[in-house]
Image (cartoon, rainbow, N blue to C red; front, side, top):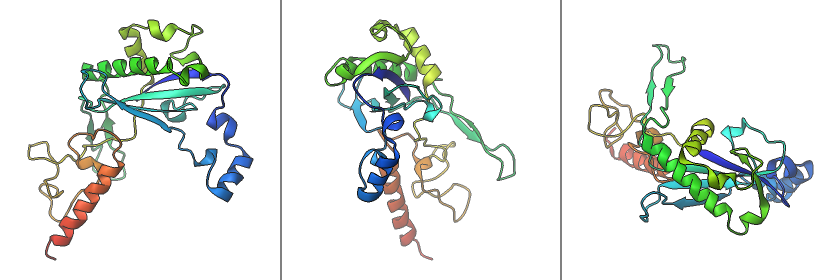
Length: 239
């Protein structure tokens, strides 16, 4: 996911300004207030490439810095909108580093190996910039923080090459990896349609790694569905 971030005016930053001891007590007493927020409460699904009804990007934003999983911490109130491509064509790899199961695996996501993925991101960020001109966003968004500039209109003048450079510099994982134990019938498949690992008896994989491709959105609900189906399959099997 790639962010566009603005400094804000006449507003507060939920992390910088509102995570106070008083608001913590409010949450403890009533379960509401800023501490009940997930910070990224603004979202949308859009089609930005071919005009079809099926979305190809998801937007996730909120009134704070949602940048590189917290690695970037602005010293002023900001609003972030991240763009996430829903159907990436790039395929990464996960390999064993050694025979020691305690050794971390070798993970190479290969982000943007497929040029189309970067093109979708650029189109998605342009949609984000168009939304920023609409009310009520426009009255609260001041100058850009990322891409950084003192020019209030610089985002509208960025070319595709500059936006792609921004995407490659500031993109981060969207926390929904899938497919490392993908279901299928080909030689690269790990599990069959009953979630059983090929070549290994009495072993199933039951999580998002069995999805051959990522779903069009967050993976939590589909993973629950996979688990329900697995429970049904296991329950039907004779002991």
